Image 1 (cartoon, rainbow, N blue to C red):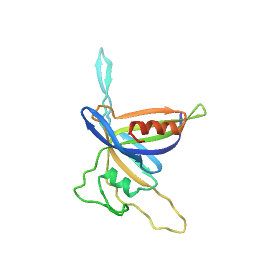
Image 2 (image 1 turned 90 degrees about the horizontal axis):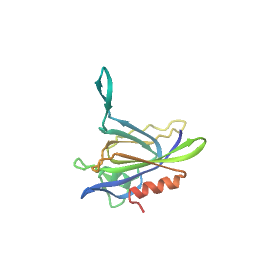
Image 3 (image 1 turned 30 degrees about the horizontal axis):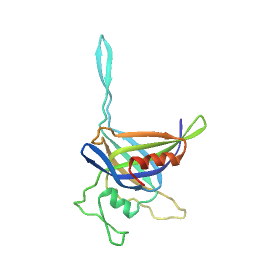
Image 4 (image 1 turned 90 degrees about the vertical axis):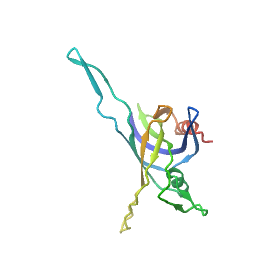
Length: 185
């Protein structure tokens, strides 16, 4: 399968109560530009018997999500970073004691399998975004576009899973699956 595109990054606020993970307040984060998921997993442990490898195994120990988007709207920034949104709905106040919430993140990866497009919906059940820095360059004689890079710590949800994938034949169906998981109507 060849990857051809990336779209529809969604997020929803994560909660765990009575042994169940739930999501609320979900919406599209922005327009997707680029995504990368790096896992912290180390090399698998190998058990040797009869002078050769007999068993091996590794466990999920977290990772880092890097998501580049076209823009960061004030309401989204406030949601994913636990910040205060001003009454004007366009001012975000950063304070040293803000608690960054856990959220779920979903994306859609467009692929080609046998020259037929398919859409892989990927959900990371529990992530915590880091407060982004600021990077910008003055405009010169030519316009150079750049996006906003967000990083997040990826962890296992309290229910035990950390990631799910679902393949559909249309982007709309993949998006519907993400919305269903995140309880977005």
